[in-house]
Length: 460
RNA sequence: GGCGCUAUAGCCAAGCGGUAAGGCAAGGGUCUGCAAAACCCUCAUUCCCCGGUUCAAAUCCGGGUGGCGCCUCCA
Image 1 (spheres, rainbow, N blue to C red):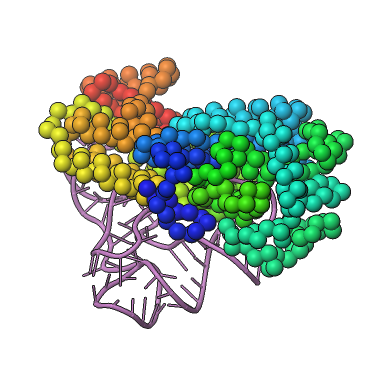
Image 2: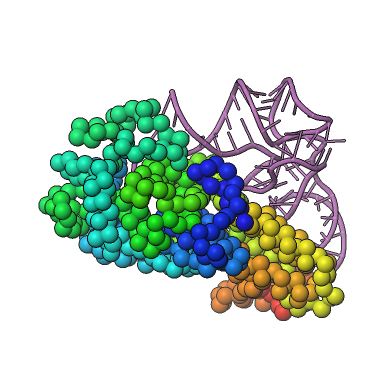
């Protein structure tokens, strides 16, 4: 099994620390707002990674954080806490906001067949561990106190910037960040913040009332559940330059050695070849897709078409293609399920091997999906093929045992009457009239489908 | 200014040194009164451009050009 390690910039053979076991940490959501489909893509990547590891016989300890405190609005160290901002806008307490969006998030990932990590760690439930972490950093000389918090001294940590090729010398102070005079270096970041009185979320600490810096939570919680060294750390590419760089600095400064063996990063989803953003109103959610008639599985299938380490360009046209393809795949599988042809055992064996090779080669889901199509399109219709694909779906997670979304007639008297009239005309071979009625329905947004079981219709 | 990713048919997209996966759309066919749906067939002598390395390059190297992202919270 091979993975592309961001740190070494190479595809490496996966060597677990403990035989047959993998320790994973995945950066989870900040629960101050609804997650969009770009976020979801990253968790799909996380899920495919899980499934591949499990398929290769690994047991997992997988930790994902829920950041319910500590992210700040304007930059890493200044500005209003996002949780507080969300709370103020919805007139709820930060805890209520966090709970509400955590529930929504869990509902969304479940609808996408994303399997839950073994451990979901909330930042607010691990404050003592974070304080202890900060204390050790201070004892070892990496932390220093200013009037508003405890900062990490990046110049004391030799490897700073190694994940993203950052050159500390090259970073210009104040380029786009407000200068903080008390910081020794512009890249220094807060590991503990002293809380102003009005700050709702705050905890007692050796430095007075305050709250944790936003990078410290991952270092502290990963260490608590996964130990001093663990196998894989994942997250979105946007986390490479700051968040993960800082995590590395904190953890290695504390431990004296690297904490993570392999770093995997999921690329962004683009919309019409550009960034998703609130201002462009293209930061779609699963709910937005549902309104247009796309299910979570349609979206998962769409994402399965691209490799996690490449950008994926979302367009409605492409999503429509994915929906059509997915539905056809389901109906083709139903044919195999009831098929009685002599199974092409050789082809099935080859496809199984190719499928495994594809997913083990840096989680190549798109290639694996191509192999599924090859099997499904074989002329022999056989339950053996259906069974083989179901086995593959344990990794794909596309609910391929489902039946295609049916075109169901709804109850609508006006439509039913017109259909009855059309059937009458057809019976009398008055096709001019029957076609006229069909066109009339079409102009109403009703599409007909004449089947052996009668007339079905749907809204287009 | 610094760092990184990327350029493959109308669209989405694999491939990462051995002679272009897959899906959608499109065209043709089967079926149908005709359609729709479904199924079958066809669909890149060529991978942004220019050089180079090699028996062999979409794949490696150098140089262009274009796109995107990060360097501020961000999946």
